[in-house]
Image (cartoon, rainbow, N blue to C red; front, side, top):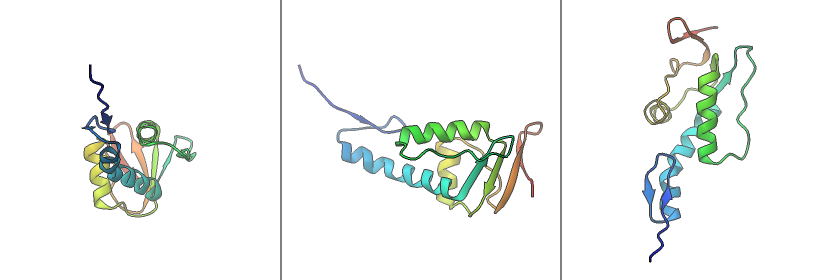
Length: 117
């Protein structure tokens, strides 16, 4: 019998070594950190939804998923780099408001972000 260790990235991609897996996940970590730096997500009461410190990548992705599902407002404090927008849209499947500094409210009737400031 042989034992084989496989390292699985956040998206299910498998690697034979931990180093290869970590290298593959490095851009995802960068884009999540960039998103958290550029954007504030707020609930229906305009309360800030903080990202807990010390999360690993899978936990951070779960947090982003939960926050983007429940937030009613998004405040863009800094333009989001296009590569990060592509990652959020394509890799994670989220629709974000226009990439312009300002406050946006989610219009649940029309299923879209609208400028709120």
